[in-house]
Length: 218
Image (cartoon, rainbow, N blue to C red):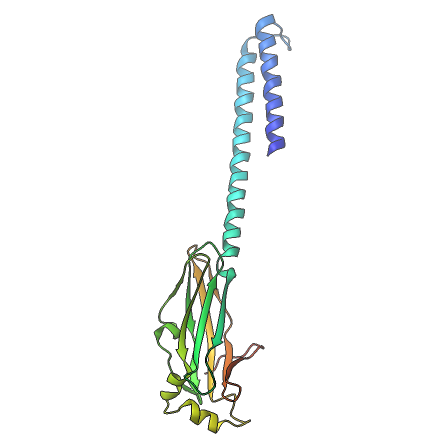
């Protein structure tokens, strides 16, 4: 764009010089030419001006598109999550669900735990069943929590009973969740992460994620 502007300036100066010389000296570069050269020079300058304006508009649009692409990359692609268990073995098993938005955009999210006790579905509440929307302001991290004990009690179990019942055969099936996360930003871009299966190990007292992709539980 800078090169085009310089070239345009040089051409305008050259045309202006020719028009001035012709007007002041009566010089005619072509046989039979008359003062219409002034009109011709004006037309050429106007035409070049139009070309420059079109190129400028194209470049401006390209810059705006690049800026938008940067916003898109920094939006939902910059969101992260973390699952953290706090407390000690045998207590309520409070589990923190942490979401972080590192972008300059407002991001919304839905979290679905799909928790199960011995294969039977249990609920940690609408915020964790994908029924309510999490709101993350720019550069903000937020967290909520649920308790393992509360999930177990829905099926008449307790942390103590699950610890006692744990075996090498059932330890990965006692308490599970298929975590689903969906994010979208104020520009309308959406991102849904693949489901990730976790199970709760009552011996080591922590959530264990499956690193490999797992099919969604029925």
